[in-house]
Image: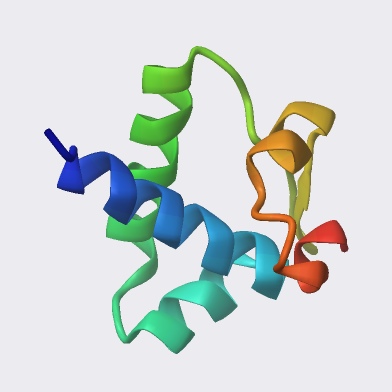
Length: 78
């Protein structure tokens, strides 16, 4: 059975990785930043790992996060 919530979290994760910023990703997705941040935190909690290094200038994938990023999405390697 498909876990649509997990699929949604992974989709949002991919957009954040592509944008390199939760704020820009939220804008692209047409949502506000706090719920997007919560989605990412929930995904990290469910996976038991940190997916992004966060800073004031944006986010960068951790080595673990890079492993979850789809290979066809070249811009995830920022």
